[in-house]
Length: 357
Ligand SMILES: *Cc1c(COP(=O)(O)O)cnc(C)c1O
Image (tube, rainbow, N blue to C red; front, top):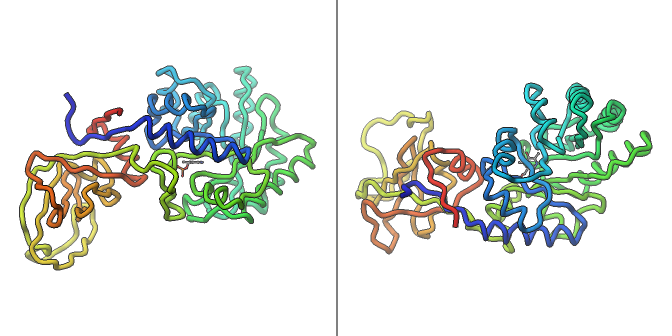
């Protein structure tokens, strides 16, 4: 028997989304790396992705790669997070592609490859403006040339960039062209080919749709669009993708009508936040057995259109159900679509039951 909260994982919708993305990207000769990190490296999800023709699985955690391998999922695997030095040994052992941004790390990888007689491909990350990982674009050519010269067992197979994650910088023709130019200059100087230009994540799909992605960008690493059908960086839903591959369901533990503003002097809530109360009179509220430990309640969207999440603490989420037409009682459940962080936490929380549809 399974309990609540529970997360429904619709594998066929995940497959549909991956397939539609593969179709679009292959038209432009862009390889899709399907990223499983938001699912905690879920083997069933990874198998579903492989079934529709995804080749490379991208992961940010070596523990997730280990979990996938021990569950019978075959690579190639790409390590997306620039590696922790303490994990390099396992990464070189298990991953086929590694994103890197430090020459010291390239040296260690080369050494480990030589010892293990393994060939690992490296994608050197270039920061074209977002201010997360990568060599700053003005210094990139020099540093990537140096990386190429270090490698013998390992191989720098291309350059990549990540956008929309820290600075929220959007992929553009300009910053994508910068990446191609850097690759071309490195090729010229080293007389080696760097076939991969790994241009982006979900936020770059929009450029492809608009026909504005510069020719030469040939790899996308995508998570969010496959699972949620959204593109949070561009603040949009992708209309040709399924939005409800994941649905979270929680049980109601109290239904009461109360004022919308607390009584008494107010300080901060349990998380040090100051909730903003708007006096809307007395409202009917359901408390759910669901909280910050299970998900990110502020990122939940009730499937009951007229319900809204008011606030949450560790274990309680309060939902305004005044305008919901169906009767909701203690023991009933409320369902939600999830934002990226809400999904990440739900997948990661052991108290959230996972149900595969
Ligand atoms: C998480 C991650 C991705 C996937 O990003 P989405 O926005 O989920 O598509 C791609 N590249 C890197 C380096 C990442 O860390």
